[in-house]
Amino acid sequence: MENSLETAIGKLAALQEVDRQVRAKREELQALTTEIAALEGQLALQTNAARDASSERDILEARRRKLEGDLEDEESKMTDRRMRLNRVRNEKELQALRREIEVGKETNQQREEEILGVLEALEELNAKASDAERAQSELAERASSEAENHRDRIRQLAAEIEAATDSRDRMTQGLDSNVLRKYEQIFARRGGIAVVEVRNGICLGCHMNLPPQFYNELQRAVDIRSCPNCHRILYCRAERVDSNEVSR
Ligand SMILES: [Zn+2]
Image (cartoon, rainbow, N blue to C red; front, side, top):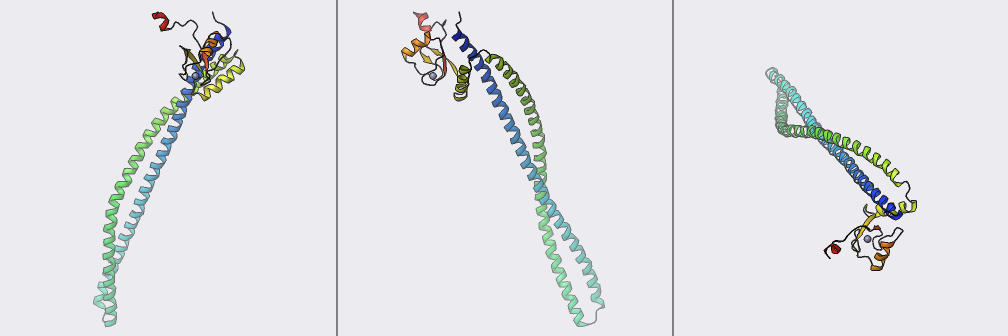
């Protein structure tokens, strides 16, 4: 036969079961939300890296085109100078022209050397840029499919939490509001375990031996009692037969 204390504790125990499920679902939902943000963060970093690598390559590519253009211009000037060399009779002019040819040659040699260096660097940068682009598109694909799965699960969890919250509201009806508040405080502070069984005089919440007199009183109690150590709400199974007693 159930008395009102057993009814109240039974309700709290059932409530605790629902609350623990809701808590676990909320934690999972939070973890998934965090995971989505982390994926988006990784993707943003990789997108930046790919953009930086390709812009670095574009800058060097522009430098290569500029150098090759200048080289070509100088070459046509050199052709022109060599043709003038045959026509100039004035010794002073001739010397100036030879000097121009010398300087032009040196300038173009420097340009050719620089072009070689740029081509070498471009080879590396091209590889780097295409690696970064590939990594970016692979990550984008993976992140979007993972995030989509996470979002599906989040929607499911949110619906389950809502349904559980509704049934929780029904379950708390008829419970004393002081008892409910006490239960909620302990649930929040004690890792989601507010109602615990006492077995063989031991609180199964904190595993402390209850004082014998307290235990005796608890078995006859008609009101809600808390563990003196962990403050959780205690209950004894009245119909419970201890293994010690069986073996006797
Ligand atoms: Zn305890």
